[in-house]
Amino acid sequence: MKNVAEEIKNSNFCIVLTGAGISTESGIPDFRSKDGIWNRYDINEYGYIQNFLENPEKIWKMLKDMILNMEKAEPNKAHYALAEMEKSGYIKAIITQNIDNLHKKAGSKNIIEFHGNFTKMKCMRCEREYEYNQIKLNDLPPKCECNGIIKPDIVFFGEEIPRDAFLKSFQLANKCDLFMIIGTSCEVYPASELPLIAKRRGAKIIEINQENTALTSVADYVLRGKAGIIMEQLLNEIKILQ
Ligand code: APR
Image (cartoon, rainbow, N blue to C red):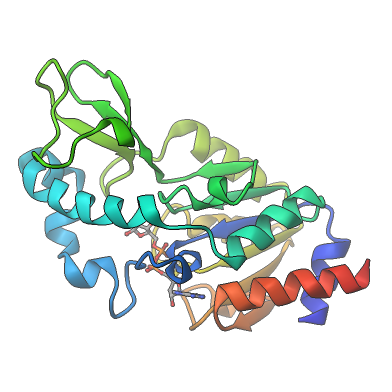
């Protein structure tokens, strides 16, 4: 933990990739753990944009379940620790795969939302934009005044990563000298490629997760445990070094 704190303190350009595991302590299930989303909803029936286009009402039932959970969730110690590390200049950006808006709620500023954000929605016919709290979730799928179907600005499998987020993330992976990966199984491309790009350029990799992942073998440091506890300890270690 002390060595990791020193790496962060001495780094010139540290970036962070977060996944659903950073939000489980806020009450939001992740995707691939035993009580994760893909164990409740079959990924092949609910995870793809084709699924949404073919049966929006069915997919909106899963989305409603996720949104009701996310809208009442609060950031946890891991989110707040990252916001403080950014404020102190120790981390330069957070690339998040999460759509739960918790990094923003925790006060982080430089956030790249790789898979979008549930709070923003759009009509698929006239492209009118909505905030999530303007949408009634009693009749599914929610409709626009033009009678078009409303879709959250989130990335389903089979959809492109938002271009701006994609380009910025790959630029950051090519610039960083330290890359911290928190709470992601690193199973989903292209987000999982970002730490490998950094590694190939000589950046050091820190993995914070409660279990091994697809990228554990390339990590220079592995902190095993709950993100909320580890991030709070890490922040305290950095403060001792100041
Ligand atoms: N502390 C640390 N690690 C945790 C915690 C926790 N409190 N809770 C869960 N984890 C770990 C799990 O062990 C797992 O390795 O976080 C990881 C979560 O992995 P996934 O559920 O696969 O979530 P994620 O990696 O974000 O998925 C990537 O897949 O379905 C798509 O679009 C979806 O963005 C998502 C993408």
